[in-house]
Length: 288
Image 1 (cartoon, one colour):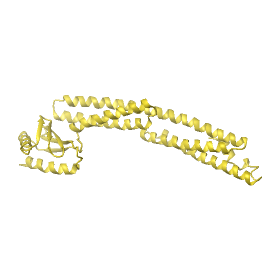
Image 2 (cartoon, rainbow, N blue to C red):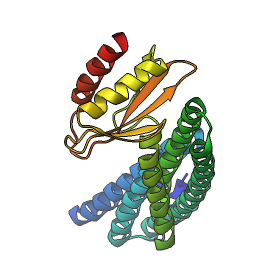
Image 3 (cartoon, rainbow, N blue to C red):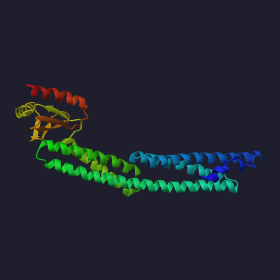
Image 4 (cartoon, rainbow, N blue to C red):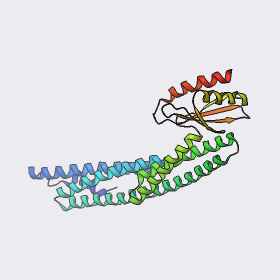
């Protein structure tokens, strides 16, 4: 890649090496610095090759960052080698190494810029899909359709989140950082809405079969008798009045299935402890 640098590292370039101990010192220093620069050059190129080969954009971004770090080391070693250069040949080798650093840095920055733009574009598409399904869920006539749209909106929101992380990692300018931050805010806000409609904050949601209309009414009556506040009508929002924990229930009358999610858990109570309270109580009513 950098033949002059390799030539300087070869034995033929040191005809004056044996002249004095002083010559030994500055030649050795220069060679060591160039060798360190060459190792960093090779590492940077290896990471760029890996970035070009991978089909995963996230892996490509990590490889680009590794290439950038290696290129910075090459730049540091090259600068020190330039300071230590005594001969025209050594100066030329350091200059060639510096040129390789600059060329690679431009390539990396252009590549990162492209990855950022692609990530923002992909996140935008995922946002649109998620919003479309979220709107459909809000107007769906039956719980089953609601659940289907919520699941698709959740998947799209996860894609938006993944792409937003890539956009954050590749942002270089203040405007790019602001755009990525706004995307992250939208992802989090949508996730909060989906938590109430879909898998909740303690996924996966729990489903109970054999829930007839009579069983459903019995469950609601029991919850109210136990002091729970229930609002809505399929879906129902249930305030447990315990540590801020709230539930959301959706009943599918055709399948006779009740779906329950933990919609809010501000106290960060362990999810398994919440379900250990809910499951036996509901199963007892359904079985009676």
